[in-house]
Length: 423
Image 1: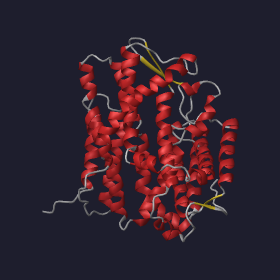
Image 2: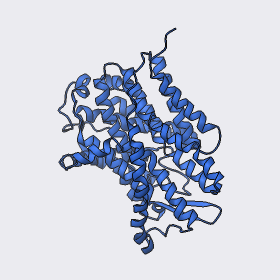
Image 3: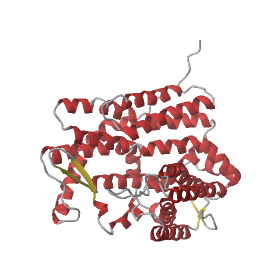
Image 4: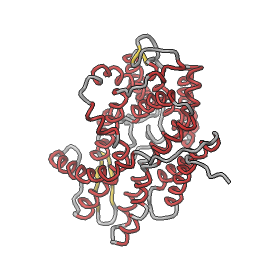
């Protein structure tokens, strides 16, 4: 499904080995995709929950579970664009880096450092709230959702660590790399659905998202071509897979659904990814002319903070409005829902603003010296950070020992990026 044909999108084509390195300036299109993706993620997470509390249990539903609304997710599920933009940005910056190990270490710090204040708040917070009498089940829901959000960082860390190797393969084999990854996604889904062994589907966390990440390399070189064909082929293939295959129509997981196209990602998700990238590339000439410089300058240094803290903001507002005051969210699309949404969104923004103001400073790691280490130490640092993020993704910040172990792994990975003490 890889479409790399005549008319290039992005930079002027150049030899593969130096094309990414030649794009020294920031690309507003890539920055816009990242900011747009993050804004839409937050908007969805704040808008689609259907929340009720019966005095004992907090129940969460999804407004997009309304029949026929799933088609919205083919555009609103923007993780493909985030991975594509990340692939392009990684190709550009890694192409300029003198030492790929130092480049990975720099990326590790930027990914892991903002997690430390999140952990500093959420490790003691559940214990404090339980002591204050907050009901256990709603608190558990909040701690789990805060951790589950980190799945993206766990997967993105794989892509970052693989980037220097993936770039070498890309320079040598070009489109064959993304084609091989896409073929892996096909074979994984065939094995999953023909055997009924769903666990094999988690291989597509690598195959699907690395395929999308790899497409960003072509954009970085100015070699992403025929976007209209990409859009039609991607969305058309997704429609066929949904109509005649075992795939649900929604590109996000819905309550009660037997299969999710996101957890783990499926071939339908990969097809929609191609469609979204083609559509975004078609819109690029108009997007780059938008007066977005001030927005990008403001959002660029806060995007990670917004991602990490928008669910705690939702948890805080839910705790007050739904649990404490007993006001359930209205039926999606009803008059009460439409009338109350501005107030709901305003409360969330009111809580989110000081969080962004307080924690955005952690977007930039401290200017500590980097150590000189081999690939073994670099990969060990990446593995420790990845293990920490994955542990928090699975278990959240629920009271217990695992969150502490996860944070120790994060700190250990960060320490491995520093200088060594020689004896």
